[in-house]
Amino acid sequence: MILVTVGTQFFDALITEVDRLAAARAFDRFAGTAPARVFAQIGLQQKLPRHIEHVAFDRDLVNKARHADLIITHAGTGSLLEFLPMGQPLIAVANPTKADNHQLEFLQALDDVYDFCWIAGPEQLESALPRAVVPLKRHHPGDSYNPGIGADIAAFITRHALVCGATCPA
Image (cartoon, rainbow, N blue to C red; front, side, top):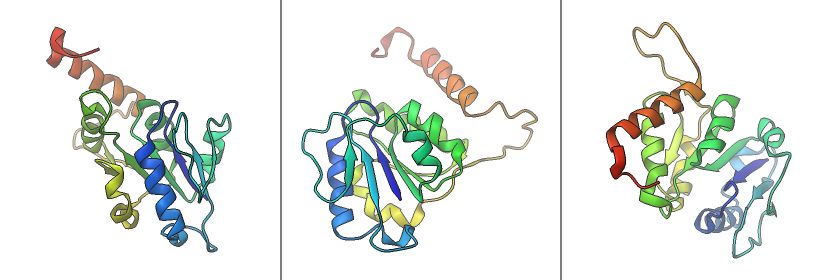
């Protein structure tokens, strides 16, 4: 199964692109059988997809992710906290409509620490499919303690707050 999630908000462009790719059977390579089953948690999506299974919200999303052949997720902090350590092939997609395109900045910072596939927007999804990988923590010489992704994100937020000061948007 291909699992897609946009979090609790909406990301119409991502769901529309996944729906298009599902119709074109672009996900079949990830499934042992064709056509691939695509299941999406679409949040507050305005236009409903026609070619994929979907629900607005799913309380069992984390369990579904553990069994997914591929996870496609928006680049929200909560989603990445859940999915990066899971060991499933993953593609994280920045939503360029979010404030200051902060998701792209977050992905770039995580890329220094984790080896995973991420893209700047949904229009890059099809070309990213061959690069979907199991996320791995990068080893940095001299690292003696691995506090995990939560500590990595907290450090990023702290660094960002120190650099921005009072000039950053809330």
